[in-house]
View 1 (cartoon, one colour):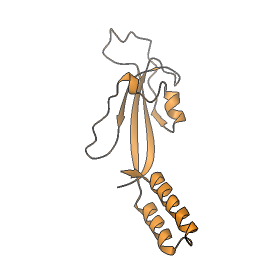
View 2 (view 1 turned 90 degrees about the vertical axis):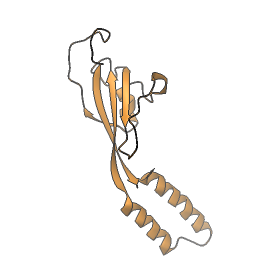
View 3 (view 1 turned 90 degrees about the horizontal axis):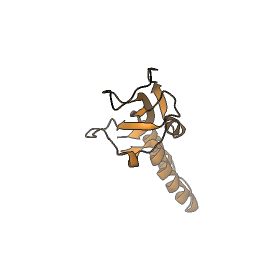
View 4 (view 1 turned 180 degrees about the horizontal axis):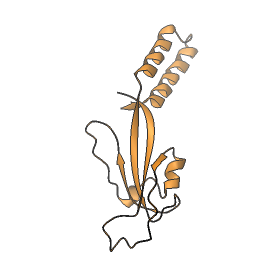
Length: 128
């Protein structure tokens, strides 16, 4: 599934080639219009567990959810995590939609829950 941004970038490359060969035609613009009309918003979710309630706290666990048919939630190993802190994810365009409750410090080896959970989202326009 491609994003609207990727599809428009491809269209622009094609339009640049057309400009060097005589110009962009009405049919080219119509194909761009159809791309924009077909785009649908998709919410991606990122669950980040941290050692503390701050967005600068180190991440100790994460999971991603892609709302695409047949996609299974992704649990990555620590070496594959794209971010070290929630702040890193925010800088990359993720928006925090849930901050963790500010609970007392804990030892995660003695309790059954993991860290402070932040839930982040990205809304992307996709072509289905």
